[in-house]
Image (cartoon, rainbow, N blue to C red):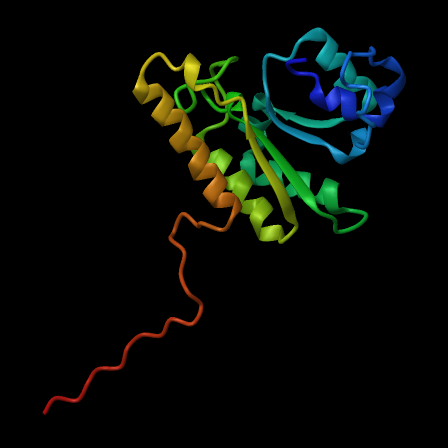
Length: 186
């Protein structure tokens, strides 16, 4: 099942998915046109075939390097929200990050998304006002070689989650704050 949950949910693959005992209750509910993958690298042949044949929008790390994460997010939001404003679900796999940021994961691949890029993705989705669900996947504390690796992975994930809920890198400030007026001396 690893790497396949979305495939089971895609309407376009409904007739191509095997019957898996205990999973007959799953009803495909996603369309390929409603998905954007950001930061792909190390994609296997079957995954690449599905991406191409279903026309799933995606950005590889090469494209992020070429375009910059700002342009990638601009294009992503334009694509997802072109026809109508609708809720957005972010599923963030920490194995999409560079392993130096998330070493406690099952499939670490060098050259992934940086922490700044990951936070920027979350900030941009938050700014839409449409982010309705977030899951952070692929954290596996058992695979951290040291407690420091586990802590690094968890702290990275927490930073991204906080950005999804509005924590800004310049700090979170009240819009009602006013500069205090000097008090008159006696």
